[in-house]
Image (cartoon, rainbow, N blue to C red):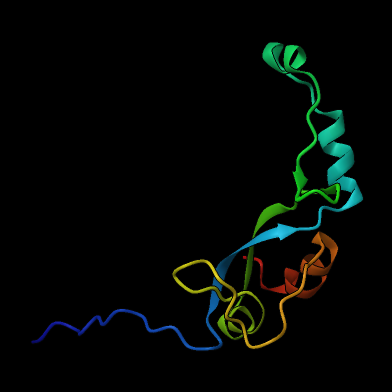
Length: 108
């Protein structure tokens, strides 16, 4: 009798992986939910602060975990060890609706 060889699982391009997608444009539903949140005692004293990217007045995006095939990750979201975009398609901003529409079928 021998023990089975349990080799580590290799990822293929069809493997479903969790990808961390940064700077996602929030949906209106998310913006309304954030506005309706109850703030704690310290939050009331601090007042409202709006996060801004650069000086153009755009709101800062949110970070989401999205399950997708590795092939799609390498195409649209891949980054190198320095955090620079290295995907095969031109870099673009994704909205929450687009991510849900495109990758909801892979959610576990």
